[in-house]
Image (cartoon, rainbow, N blue to C red; front, side, top):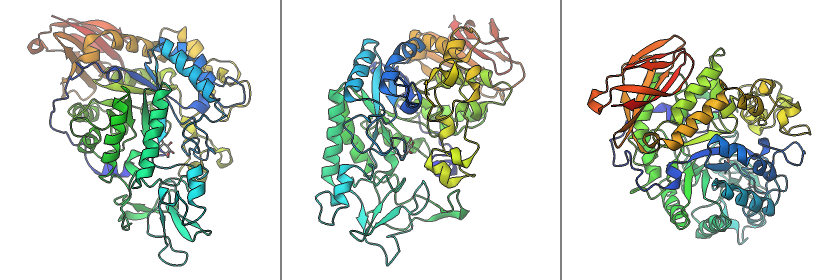
Length: 561
Ligand code: NOJ
């Protein structure tokens, strides 16, 4: 399993509960992204319109009605720009075009206009830290030491023959420096060697990258998910990183603390600049932000919220057990952050939530419970495709089948990320209705039981549950705008909370155990007497102040006075 590159740093610190701030319940500006549910699409795997085995933009367009019915307000498309696909699109060779594998700019325009008709925003994935080594900037940069683009990347002399400039290792394995025999220098890459880091200290890089965002805004894009923002800057003196602990990681490299090549303060100047441009277009910036605690998350919101509107709270994804106490702690921390919370439970880099929380017996119940959790908290939610039908992580079982290079390199300890990127399961026909060709990754066997067509017809399915929670979320003022209040905090099995807005209240009770549980609500101080069921799973109900919950049961009710 690929654990994101900064997880080590995150786990090192305990979850800090930040001071309560002015952001609590602050949605009166009704910014569109505050109420939005975002849906991440991994374009290779979503829908294949031309039957070549790889998903594409026309495929996405053909599924917009499905997304609309589900309750999605915005789609974030993982990189669909021209790319040699070494890192499946996170190695961009032209930021202002579409990879032919996914279609054309005309297909993008079609998708944008169809999405607009349905009031669905499009968010693109902006790979800001690095380009592909096939990008024209890099090809020029490496052509000679005097190239006009030389200083667009990080070139340095080695310490001596065969010795890179320092000890930094790539998060994808091996030295972070690649020797170029033509110019006799090394270039720096935090990720694969084919992903050279841009030199953000060069104003020309900044101008070019800012202009790219303007170009897409003019084409109808509503914002960007900014890839790997933590790694934009490096210490100019290239100091060696300290070693965190003895031993070797899955790639055989030392465990380094990324002290001098991540989270440098200069990152925030760039984010403020990108935000200014975004504000001119009513756009949103979502950050791939691997923070150690909420204090770091606050830095990404910026002073007065002038950086990222939605830095993702990955600390939430690291509560890797169904523990009410752990979730309470993390929710309280992010709820007290200085900006609007963003909840994510799965993405293309981490094992799907279905398996992370599933116990093997009640996985569907647990998937519903997790949906009820992250979709009813105060904040924006980012879904990952397939989560809504209970897709299971299905990693390759043989090294020769692995597509993700980190899996090939780190096998067997690191199996790569193919398992969470398998084709969307649309129906029970061959290849799950994703393609008529051989899909680029095999379709998991679970498509027979977990697919959109069948689940749409089953009132007890994970999909219908997602639809109903999203419907409630979009129509209930307390869920849209209300503050969060933890209740029954000493309950070791059930996580309960209220969302309260202008006298209206919603209670959410989630049984994180495999035994039936009872909860007594004592909410007189909040002006509430009892709860009326709006969404309840099997064997879960309320009677006056008492809620009974089946194993892994969910109860969402409107509070009555
Ligand atoms: C983070 C992306 O989510 C991941 O998929 C990618 O490999 C790295 N950034 C490098 O761009």
